[in-house]
Image (cartoon, rainbow, N blue to C red; front, side, top):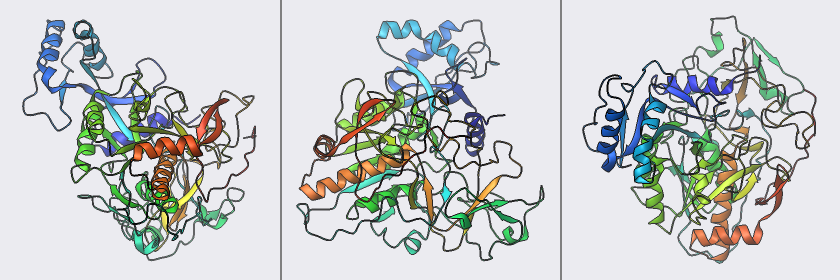
Length: 528
């Protein structure tokens, strides 16, 4: 049976958020976004209108919807419980029913008055609420290659370009393991992720998996007896980065990997990494906006690199994003570089789609991912007229954990027999993509035993999560090389002057390829 990665991840994320009820949408269709059950969001000044309309529509069909007490958060939103409206046995706790009950009010107002409390995750989507694949252990050279550029250029003598990465944070002992990442530090108020250490080497129970990767000594399969923990794993303690069995948690190292890509391309940049997305790389829309604005309180950076967002099935942004987009418009010295998402879809993904909707916005650069040959969009990458530029985002090699001893990771999701985004084996764009290569058995997919890998500071990883910081770094480097101090002008000039052509689903698109990145040939129409 093919893995249902959406449901696997939704359960995992719900548990990581303390059991928050999460629902896939749209109802009755293949889901491509998720939201909180039992609650809707509205703007604080309009909350009383929304509640009054709900209660008028729900008369005699359950209890009254209360007007939440207290002050709205910095996002300017109010979270309204709606499970009392209509049948509480509905899968989403009355959310869809309540939004339908507001249609007349919205018609009179001429705008959306409320919305779902969407799940915002690191490059999420209906089929992939995570990066495009799980990290792969490797000792290969960094790709793109680390850059050392001491020569004087036009921007020397100016303050360094600052990039704020809003993500999962950086791992402890980062600089001991990766001393070249000297420009990276936690953002104000962010703590490092803690990487527990293990002193003993792997012992019996490990077998090599041939034919997966040239770095065969790092790709391992663990076969313990069910319900037991091997003695050589017993000293690994749970922590923010490890689960109760001592395995590195899913999503850990995501922020570290992103920061490393920026440093590899723009070593003179000052990078600050926030850990606002630490709970499985996820936050609900309401909380996400609060955390994003909170991360900006110490000061707005030159560039925000954001590898997170959400789809909503509409051509208008999330209600919760409005306050942030207004603040971004009021800070023209800051550029948002945002991931287009990993749905393999042309449905708008927010806030990246704000680069195009409702009109072109030079304050936002939306970034899709190219596959390893750099000629075509990666199968998982979102696409469409709202994606402004593409960059390499498949099987990049970068900094992963900071521990000075090997760390074990258990794969959570089984791979697929065929690409889950392209139509068939006859599709002209089908290739040996991350959907099925390398083949793995995942724990959340019911794999027993699941495949594991041993990491020693580097990983090979894919996703628009990683094409995004590449573009952010290239813009920062362009500013230093040219002396341009306006990041929005720099982004526009870089894309127009240095952007080349690629295609996605056969449609020509703009692409940026950084120094130190080399294309790798793809195998078409693989047999799996």
